[in-house]
Image (tube, rainbow, N blue to C red; front, side, top):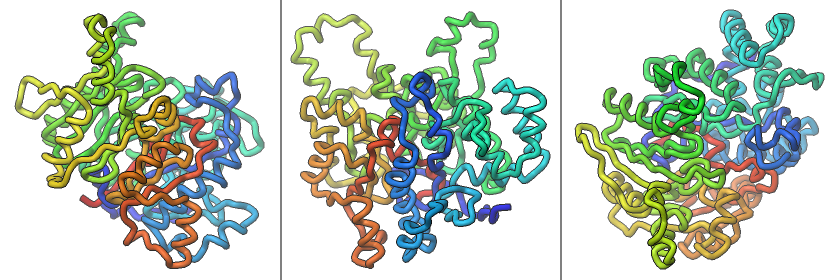
Length: 483
């Protein structure tokens, strides 16, 4: 049995840039090495990946950075030892050398721990076998597996002897999408794609059965399905006004009183409405801004087109912002566009107690208001544009997650190393740019410290990670941030 994780730590997130104290991740597992070209896009990957490179040459640095900032006792002075270990099992939950942090928490570890309970194991195995259409014999075989192996099977879809039972869950590395902490509540998500159904069930069991969430179990929020959904024709079920789907990349807790919800390829208007009703009824937030973006694979979630760097600094895609509006207005085609042209991108802000929403013209206006009015910023609000707003690099680098950054603390972010023009834009705004490898070496040599680091963009190797279409923001579910 694994060492049981601390359960008394609080769970609370009310900001995007407050110092990160605890988060949920999932390191790349053996299932990613089984993604085949014919199924890659069905499983929401752009391409097949080289698992060993992704694990040891890229995600490896991500975990080490997180540990240095959140749980330095697990990593300080150990880099040489970790890198020389031939098993490289530092990142594998259940292994002898697993880092087992209470602050950088792998969901696979939590899953393994709840599977120690026989009743929970039987329930979850039955649920998984039901949706995956497994035989009763397979179900019985799974119930004889050790908890750490069963957790791996549920996630990877395969036994350790390489027999495949069902599809892998390559998207589980993007833990942002399974749930989102809203102040001291957790909103459980409803994935839009069939490929993520098993993810959703595993997450439900972890949130409802693991003791680290026991003290806020009453604060877990599930989005109700349309009560008439089973009566609707199939074409109407797929309508944005009837389907109930929501993923965490479309939800941002930007201030204690203010939540952003994106309506996108993955999150429906119906789900956004249901979330808004629940949160207002429970008095969890006072203001919700709905950001409707084009339903394109290019954008996917709102955190692929903007994220926050500091209270007064944001990174975003210009073509969906004010600069994009201005460019379109200079084009004669803009004046002859269909009546619903404006509807592809729209921002409506709802305040509890007010019947009518307020429309906000563009993204920069919304983000400026958040910085100024919700976060009390007095200095100028700054915008850093993907690709430096230079054609064609804005869209090119947005595709490889230039706008998808995770703030470890105010002004210190992790992003991919491949987005050169965006990195130049950060330099022009006074940010230090440093590779993850160099920064870790400086931490080990006591030349730099996470506590004193300011205005820094940490470059993560990303040749394989970027094939999955998700950045460092996607690869994290913050459980606790300072405000």
